[in-house]
Structures are given as C-alpha cells and as structure tokens.
Amino acid sequence: MRKKDKALLLFLAGIFFLVLLILVLGIRTYSQYSVLQSHRDYFKQHNISIQQWMTIHVIEKQFNISKDVIYQQLRINGSMSNERASLETICRRNGLDCPKVIKNLEALRPHD
Image 1 (cartoon, one colour):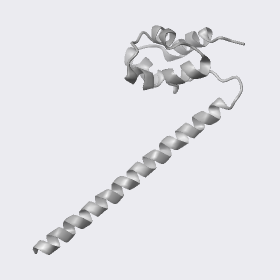
Image 2 (cartoon, one colour; image 1 turned 90 degrees about the vertical axis):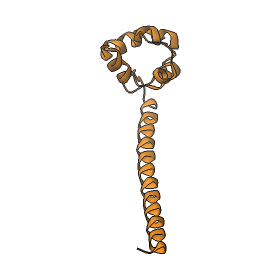
Image 3 (cartoon, one colour; image 1 turned 60 degrees about the vertical axis):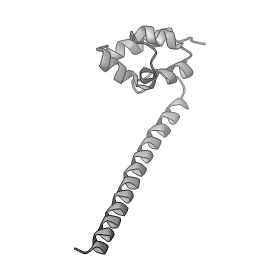
Image 4 (cartoon, one colour; image 1 turned 30 degrees about the vertical axis):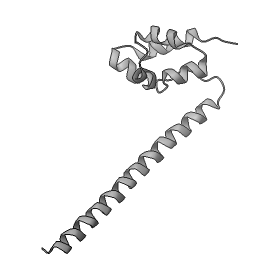
C-alpha cells in the first residue's frame, strides 16, 4: 500500500469514528432530554409524591425537606455522588427498602 493510500484510509477512518461519536452522543442527549421533559411534566401535576427516580436535590427543592433530614433518613453522608444519585440507586447501594424510605420522607413533608 502506498503512503498516500494509507493516509487517505486513516483520514476516512477518523471521519467515520467522528461521525459515529457524534451520532452516539446525539442519541444519548435526546434520550436524556426526553427523560427531563417527562420529569417536568410530572411536576406540573397536582398532588405529586416522592418517587424512586428523584434525586436528593429534587426532593429538597420540590418538597421542602432539608438535605440533612434526607441524609439522615437514607443513612448516608452528603457527598456529591449521593446528591446526584436517584433514591432507587441509593437504596440499592445501601440495602434499604426504598418504598419504606419514601413513605418516611413523605411523612416529613410540610403539608399546607
């Protein structure tokens, strides 16, 4: 194979992988956007409740429960990875009964 042919083949392979990367990242972004949109739609409803997919940050902001109380209920520390993980993930990692944790957090919500 000549030097020019190798360079062309390498260039085309690079373009192919770049297009493939853009395609994969685009699909991933669209998937995350649709999840975010479904969550936004959920919060437009009346009488919402704490769900397993929610993060500590979401629960704190939407249900007015302090992070410290949530951490205490989940028996975890206040790390960034814990704050961004879903209740389901935290419960699974720590061997907790998620429906029971949600019930306890619901009882702590200030009701109008």
